[in-house]
Image (spheres, rainbow, N blue to C red):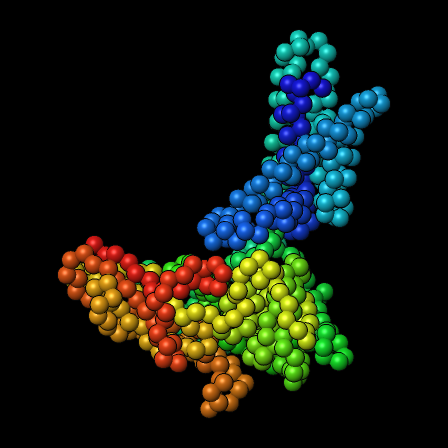
Length: 499
Ligand SMILES: Nc1nc2c(c(=O)[nH]1)N[C@H]1C(S)=C(S)[C@@H](COP(=O)(O)O)O[C@H]1N2
Ligand SMILES: [Mo]
């Protein structure tokens, strides 16, 4: 094939192959773009990765995935082209050879045969369209017709692939659960959620006590797919006998429900990577019994994520399998994730598969990349709502969170930090199922959950609104400003209001 046709035809084959794989695999690790995206992440220097999380956030992840898709298209174009050329050199028909090249590459990348067959077949369609008989055409129009046919065939195959693949996506990504819509929310959960809604402050533009959408942070672009009936948790390491638990071992036990807030250490000071849900699960100590006297644990997951932290943090940790009364959404760790009270999000390991007890410290995934996010969260009061009321008064509001230290109060300054006034705090969410003694101060009633705050005042001209929280131990949120990297953002949120 001449150069004028080679590149567009190869790209068209590449697009078709990727779409064919997607048609069968959906957005799962068997989709050819998934391992390519992992390669992109692995090839990105740690400093760039850390920067991209801070500076670009979710956009960085999307750009990375777009790059991976483009790379996958090129790789498959190359594979089809090579297959076709080899066949042509040997006098054999090119479409089957192009298809074979594509199939081999897909299986090599993912190990998944059926999506590989679809990738190969899609490539074969494009190759067949191009290899059609062009005799009698003048040279120029033949080139144009080849390219047009390739593009048309690729577009048709990709359209079908996109529809089929989209329908195959394990429901959910971030918000839907594997069984979303099919499962009734248990009445007890519905009651708790209703009660939490009724305790939420009525401030326009402010999310309630339970988040509508829950932020998501992952090292992978494509979440792992783990089936509940194939899931197990292995407890190994310095624990004497190693043990293994399956999904029924969890769900057969008495469940515990908790309203818990999570916040990512990579959140910005007034960012949106902090949310609250009502979780159902089983305390880790119900499974493990008394914890051994070792320093720390390494917790591992199905996406090869691993985090190390002090063993003592597991004392109050929960193995959660429901979020807001439904099975965990795939994006939030289906079927089981860890919730470690009061700690930054990163050790709340999703798709958890193993707990290894260590007798000395090691580094987890993010700590190897320079972060320090295994400890307790910083205290924060965010300012997300600024409303001009009909009366001319200004209403400001947000959420405040200090992990298990709790929130004692939130103060607002409307003169840039000169003088302070106390804001109105919401109640915490209601007491959920709590198998601990209510009189015990380890009780779970709102121990690791944010509060909402609200403050309304008469503005006297343009000014700076500043907010700060005091935690349950009486410590005022530190004023000193620091970036998220490496150990979480600090400082007071302030915002200019043009009165
Ligand atoms: N297996 C696994 N668990 C994980 C992560 C991950 O990439 N893989 N990300 C962590 C980070 S950095 C955070 S902030 C929380 C976010 O949980 P969410 O996505 O449910 O909000 O999950 C943590 N658990
Ligand atoms: Mo995080």
